[in-house]
Every structure is written in C-alpha cells, then in structure tokens.
Amino acid sequence: MSGQLRYDGQVVVVTGAGGGLGKAYATFFASRGASVVVNDLGGSFKGEGNSTKAADVVVNEIKAAGGKAVANYDSVENGDRIIDTAIKAFGRIDILINNAGILRDVSFKNMKDEDWDLIIKVHVKGSYKCARAAWPYFRKQKYGRIINTASAAGLFGNFGQANYSAAKLAMVGFTETLAKEGVKYNIISNVIAPIAASRMTETVMPPDMLALMKPEWVVPLVAVLVHKNNTSENGSIFEVGGGHIAKLRWERSSGQLLKCDDTYTPGAVLKKWNQVCDFSKPQYPSGPNDFLALLEDSMKMGP
Ligand code: NAD
Figure 1 (cartoon, rainbow, N blue to C red):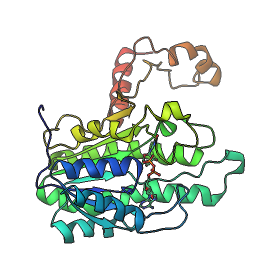
Figure 2 (cartoon, helix red, strand yellow; figure 1 turned 180 degrees about the horizontal axis):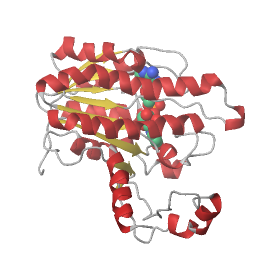
Figure 3 (cartoon, rainbow, N blue to C red; figure 1 turned 180 degrees about the vertical axis):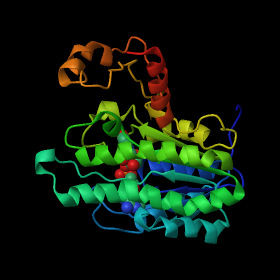
Figure 4 (spheres, rainbow, N blue to C red; figure 1 turned 30 degrees about the vertical axis):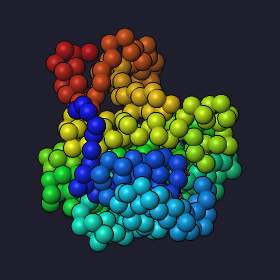
C-alpha cells in the first residue's frame, strides 16, 4: 500500500460522527471519495438528550467541500436503522466504524445500575447492533471492513471507569471473534484504543497535552486498516494517538503443569508460583485451542 489511499465508490458508516474522532473519520473518508453516513444521536457526553445538530453540521461541512454524506440521528442501539440509512441513500455498505461512545465515570463504590447499563448498552450493544445489521451485506458481497473502538481503560483498567473498562475490553473479544468468522468472506475486523482531544477528554487532560492529541492523528491508522488492500491485519489491537501507533497482543507465561492427583493442592500451586508467573519464555496465544495444545504438549513431557 503506497500513494494516496482512496475509497471511491465505497460506503462508510461512522457512528458518533457528530464530533471528536467520528467527525475526523467522516470528513476524511468523504474527502477520499467515499459516501458517508454521519450517525450521531447528538446528546451529551454522559448520554443525556439528543439532537440532529451534531450530525447535520458534519454533513453540511462534507457537502460544502464537495463530498457525499447523509445524516442519521438514531442511537447505535438501533444499529439496523443506521445501516438502513446507508442502503437507502447509497445502495450498499462497505466499511463500518463503531465509534459512538459516552462516559459515566464514577468510583465503583458509588456506581449505580443505570451507570453500568447505559455504558454497556451504548458501547457493547450499539457496536453489536451496527455490525449485526451490516454483516449480511458484507457476507453477500464478500467484502467488509469493521473498526471497533476500545480504550486503554479497557485494556488496563482505570480508576472510576469500571463500567467503561468492561465495555471497552468487550470490544476486543467481539473483534477477535468477528475477525475469525468474517475472514473467509473477506470481512476484516480490527480494534483500536485511541487517544485524542475531544469533549470526552478535554476535562481530564491538560491543554498542552490535548494540543498533541488531535483526532485527525488517529485517522491514518484507521484508513489503512479499512482499506481494501488490507488483508493481513485482522483481529489486531492497536493503541493510537498523538502520532504514535503500537500493536498489542496477549502474552502468556510458559506456566507450569501440575500433576492432577491428590498432590494437586493449594500448597503445591504456591510451590510452583514462580514458574506459573515466569515470563522469561513468553508465548503469544491467538485462540482457545492454543491452551489445549499446550496441555497436550506438557502431558507428553510429563510434570
Ligand atoms: P466524543 O464525545 O467527541 O464523540 C462521541 C460521539 O458519539 C458524540 O458525538 C456523541 O453524540 C455520539 N454518541 C454518543 N452516544 C451515542 C449513541 N447512543 N448513538 C449514536 N451516537 C452517540 O468522544 P470521542 O473522544 O471522539 O470518542 C469516540 C470514541 O473513542 C468513543 O467510543 C470513545 O469511548 C473512544 N475513546 C476515546 C478516547 C479519547 O482519548 N478521546 C480514548 C479512548 C476511547
């Protein structure tokens, strides 16, 4: 892949495209020849209220620059309506960017069911609903590209974000499975943990740091991952922001096989604790069968 990547004739759905990262994706893809569905519920960053303004402003901006875009004001919980907008307006869907998101930060001690449920609904159910509605089109045309949006809070945990962390790590598992199920239909799914200045981060990051974190600087990675030439990165996890891009993967210690008889006690586990946690010979598993294979290998060798 070199030269200018273009998306002519392709249809891109960007959820939460009324501001922040979503707006940056939408305007970019429109400027590179794609027709874009600009979805945004238009509420607050805590998920309160709704308005048509956020999506309309972006659509007008794209059109004024000579691009093609339509607005959709549904919540991502009604992902089927968002995908319908793409089909009705442009006749197809090629790329889905699950980006919409909100925050309900509160310490776990003070977290209410409503804080938990709303975050799971918007991030997890919303991403599922959009992908589920796009999936039959992707399979039929043997082509599709999906980006799901995780967060460092999901990968590593973060104070005050138990709900958001759970939802964001769910995006990783979701992506990994879509990547496996989609690959034979040329449906490629990847997940990013971005960092960017937006209304979500403007209250928690200092202005000098925000200046280094333009949403536009997340776009090039996403552009590469959803391009038709990308057939190699599938089910990959990236952290991206401020111009830095890094890939993440699971690392497993080489571990310890214990004999499964009456010597397999908590004390026996404690005795082998150093080996259980020994990362000096790491493994990089990519599926549930890796562990079973490991078990078979270890059994052959004996404890
Ligand atoms: P943002 O608040 O600027 O953008 C999110 C957009 O989603 C908003 O325009 C909002 O109206 C829209 N939205 C919210 N709920 C919706 C719903 N139910 N249906 C449709 N639209 C809805 O925030 P952002 O920083 O651009 O965040 C974009 C994504 O990136 C989010 O998923 C966020 O969790 C994730 N993220 C951002 C950062 C960061 O540093 N900005 C870090 C990690 C993850």
